[in-house]
Image (cartoon, rainbow, N blue to C red; front, side, top):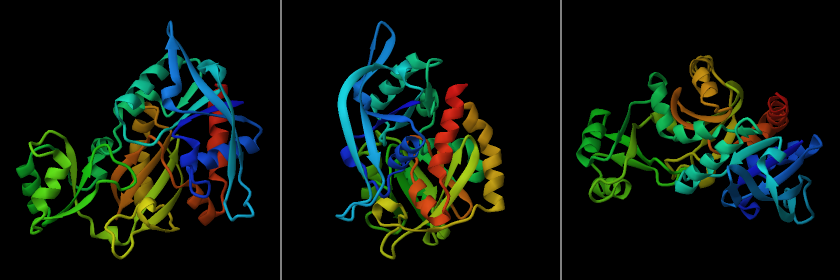
Length: 319
């Protein structure tokens, strides 16, 4: 088969950590051709979508210099999207205007090739806001652009909360808010603007965050596996990107009940490859654009999760 990966430049890929690289390796190992393209390489002419893409050849073997993989791009040529068996959207956030335009261009490929995750689902499922559909599983959460509502909320939940931008990723722009902090107003202003012109999310602080932030990867509504990201002693965030330590994790009975409850909505929205962030049994985020963690999970569990994802894509594409 021919798989197109719509993503950031290959130069940004960390071969030993990157989930997209692991998926490329798994696809190549199964005899498929992988192609790389930037979202801005998409075009549509008379309603026919196409892309300028280059075949990418990946190698996962360790090199003499200690690196954990390599890649090589062929020349970029124009391809009709329907010439690919599947298009895997692996562009990192932020979900900006160009991201939205990308999903709309991909609509022209509906019914002609498999697109994972579904473009409509991506437009509807902001990674922070999507969790409000599952509030019974989430910590108390406020979405607002009003400063004094944030202060009132932090007081109501015990004096501590976490404030997040709605378009961030990998822990970027997340702050721990304390109502007695003299920087409280400055932090709020940094998130919503001086005049409250940007929405933000504020969640009650979960003490279990010190024990770790669990990432559970789902494939078509079923759990693949999980890892626990434990924050450094000097950090409030557990994201791998900011130095979180990764340890093996199991999926609890409570978390399985949560997954069973939310899976029908995920499937209905075409969100097939998803990462749930769970702290102390509470759902804090639903990652749908380019969920990560599969390489760490594979090393912890000794399971070829990437191969399972590609096998699912094969079967789905054939349908």
